[in-house]
Image (cartoon, rainbow, N blue to C red; front, side, top):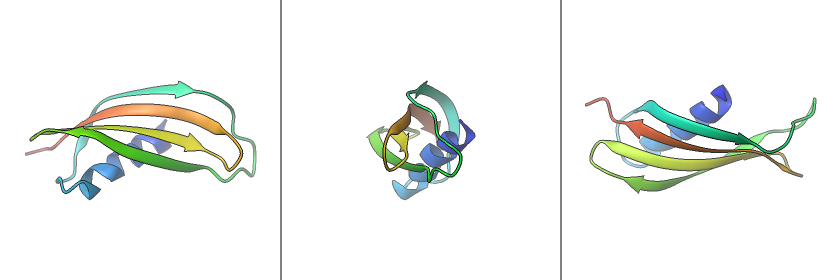
Length: 77
């Protein structure tokens, strides 16, 4: 979950916003990773307000989905 939180949070500054802190994150575990698997992530910004950014993402290997996540991040203004 730390990997996923970091993955989602790193997308927020790329949205043109200042660095943000995690307010809420949910994760759904879909499948296991195995020793030696290369794990990657993909994140999309769903919605952005003046102070909040809503994102969703997936963590996967080349062969299968491992986890999905949604998060809400706040700009520390």
